Amino acid sequence: MLTQPFYNLGLTEQELNQPGISLTTPIDGSHLGKVAYTPAAKIKTIIERAQQAFLDWREVPAPKRGEVIRCFANRLREHKQDLGMAVSIETGKILQEGLGEVQEMIDMCDFAVGLARQLYGLTMPSERFEHRLMETWHPLGVVGVISAFNFPVAVWAWNFALAIVCGNAVVWKPARKTPLCALVCQKLFAQAIAECAIEVPPYLSQVIICDSAARELFVDHPLVRLISATGSTAMGKKVAPRVAARLGRSLLELGGNNGMIVTPSADLTMAIQAIVFSAVGTAGQRCTSLRRLFVHESIYEQVLHALKQAYAQLVIGDPLQPKTHVGPMVSQSAYQNMQVTLQNVITEGGKVWGGERALVNQYPQAYYVNPALIEMPGQSSSVGKETFAPILYIMKYKEFAQAIALHNDVSQGLSSSIFTQDMREAEQFISCRGSDCGLANVNVGPSGAEIGGAFGGEKDTGGGRESGSDAWKNYMRRATNTINYSTTLPLAQGIKFGDF
Image 1: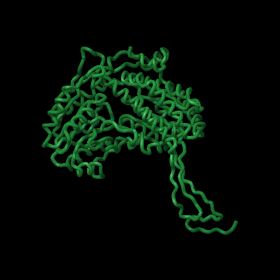
Image 2: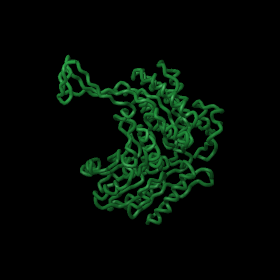
Image 3: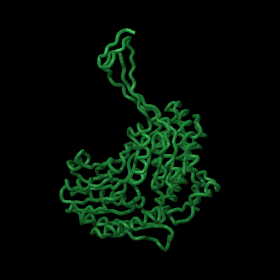
């Protein structure tokens, strides 16, 4: 029974049978349950409760806040198998990817626990005698998280773990396709709180499942100090102006049209593995999926032949089976968008291998596809758009400068990659004259990232940074402090007043 992992994680029969959104699994189209929308009239109350939780939580020392996240990580470890399976069932990604997503949550929590003792400010030399100049970082307030279907728990955890150790309350709006994973995460956090010795205020973490009216109230509310939104560029362009209109903060992780350059010196064995994994993982439904491949003309035919052989060996099918490489697309509309794109690129001179629907007789209510390889004569308008599907465009280049220019000539700027053994090419690719993306990799594919580094991109990708490095600063406010320990008061610009 596909609903069993959700029951194992604490959801009840009643919670899976609410009047509201009807949920199906991409695996076979079968019914998973129904969840209720959060009424728009309740959004204000939910946010006000979160604000009160924040006011209490900010007083708790950061290392104590980290202890709560440590308890949560332990619950994730205990329930990794069930939660990983729940992710696969609700999204259609293969089980190993579902388990990997939960491991990423655990790793992020471990990172946040250590960070709880490292929320450092700076001390700077003051230009005035007997003065100290320094900065301090303080909790921000209520953090709103909008997550996408393809990583229904990991990206939330990037935000949640940091926001909590930084002293904030969190309100989470999951994707409409994947609310069950959000609900079970809330169950696990509640269990962690119950087992932890730290007193946690009620409503520190809440989930809302919104229609458009409630979502707008959520985004517009002035007490939501930060909206961290992951999804399409179109979604970001709707959210960002609304938040900006009230002078709130946005952290945007949006679309990616990621490219890879394969040079004549590349280790092709490594490159082919990276290309296939990056292009077909999660059925091409990652923001970091490889979509554009630029291959030097001297090795083009060799690379194309190797990719055709590799694609022919892919196992497409039930994502819960251990030998499956590619599971289903998330929905019929995702499949239809892929087919429209394939027709468009054919009119633009593209030569398509694959892309057709698979396993129709076995799974008539699901949308499995054969990943598509497309030879393109150039970077057409369709290539410049992100289609969230297993489509890989392959193009030739002659000069390295041409490859860089083509790579950067799209509106998105998330992840990028080069395979080369030429030091000059590698260094130029990660220099200011190279990739214009937030992630620039050498001899590593564009798909996926370690939690220790800041994750995010430029241009239409939104400019946000999540996860590691100093991304924690998004969830705090900075104060610059001047401390005068002298017996005089030197005034700015040398202004002097008489004695008062």
